[in-house]
Length: 323
Image 1 (spheres, helix red, strand yellow):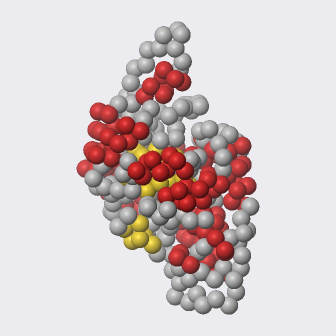
Image 2 (tube, helix red, strand yellow; image 1 turned 30 degrees about the vertical axis):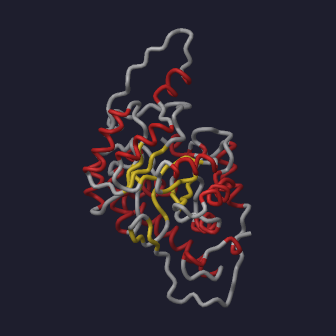
Image 3 (cartoon, helix red, strand yellow; image 1 turned 180 degrees about the horizontal axis):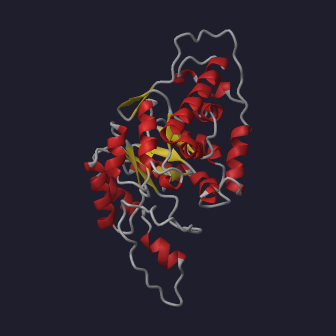
């Protein structure tokens, strides 16, 4: 379980994420007037208390019996937002009820349009208010055995795969079931709520996704868990933001371990950040209370960085506060 949770941190990509964040020291700006400051923001028509979203991670019940429901309760209690994974270990409806507020849903392509549509319709019927289409993990490097009582309860059984001896498991197996740009266009027509694309590092891909109607982009290298020699996500963030020219919000994901890390990504132009492993550490330690505690710690750290750098609101955070 620990190997699954910690996977990706000690790869060239994972280490690159950490190094890229550490390469941006924060510049203190004393004597600024920051009384009355706050971390509130508007994002896709929703008012959030802070820009620290819970990233989609599979199988929360590996860490605690209360699973995704505990995380949903915690993020609602902390006035935040959670992106529920396609590979959640509890029913989507149960997680939504635990939050008592509309959550976001992370959608993996299900191998066909019909299967993907069924999962999408279920999420929409359960009240999920944004769809985060993740496109950067079509090839599975390895699989870990799951306990008998933990499984992806919201997905259909895998499609049977029959490869010929001269066929590739990658090209003719995994990638034959992966989505393409035409599938993104098809999905856009069927999503009546904001649609974000997650897993983009190339500015041209971001522009093409927005041209096809995506309402937001999440710059991410999957926390180093997929392509182990991908560039640090933070290094790609400015190019994506410049290429999009403010057309849609750009969010950042990969390697956020502190409020200072969040400040760095916001200073480089991200509207919000997705936090992964830290909240699962809290879940494993103390269930919903542990997750809420981690969110509060991260928010406190962000507020302290803002105050010390002379920023009363998120709008005040800019590249000149970050070396």
